[in-house]
Amino acid sequence: MTALALAIPPRANAVTRILIVEDQRDLAKGLKANLEVEGYSVDVAYTGAEAIRKSSANPPALVLLDLMLPDVEGYDVLARLRREGHTMPVLILTARAEEVDKVHGFRLGADDYVTKPFGVMELLVRIEALLRRARPAPSPASAGDGAVHRFGDVEIDVDDHRVRRRGEEVPLSPKAFELLLALVRKDGKVATRVELLRDVWGYAGAVTTRTVDTHVAELRRRLEENPAEPRHIVTVWKVGYRLQ
Image 1 (cartoon, rainbow, N blue to C red):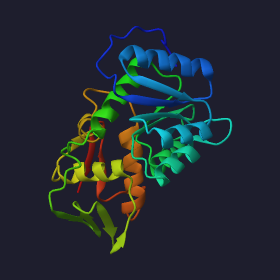
Image 2 (cartoon, rainbow, N blue to C red):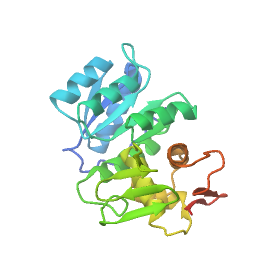
Image 3 (cartoon, one colour):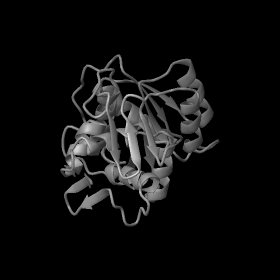
């Protein structure tokens, strides 16, 4: 991570508590200092067991989760939190750049990831966006409209948050479901990556991330006959995606 000493004007986030799960103590302390300057209340866990205990005793608004922990993998912590019903956003911190690792995290319920080394400003933008999306007010991409949408052999029940293919339910993460709805509601028009990051992840401006592409790959894997040659979730080169 870069620029840990960067001074950032404080904001009124004192009631928002963030849990950092990171075994590298210098990195954890640097992150904690920067987030506290920003106005957040910050707690730190150095092991997976400590993270689960602290999350259960006093659930944070958001978890920053490193994948490489001394006792268990971050994936195991994430899976345990989701099994126990914790719905707070989880932002993965990882040195792994492989797409398969990121997809695995999304399947377990992660909301976003940043790859080490990363800049503080980028991290803060991701945190603010995830917290904004976690607020109770419904967003355009997640509010139900009572409709059932269909394409190919796929059926999307908006109110029930269920997707079926050939009559069988297809499990999707909340973000993958919101992304699918965002594409459906474009009614055949192109959705740019910037639009999707704004509507589904809540980013206010252009952010460099492969999050959209990774989630699209997951949708194709689950909903397309041949994910390598998609018929419905198609790429519009250098622009974004279109559902046809």
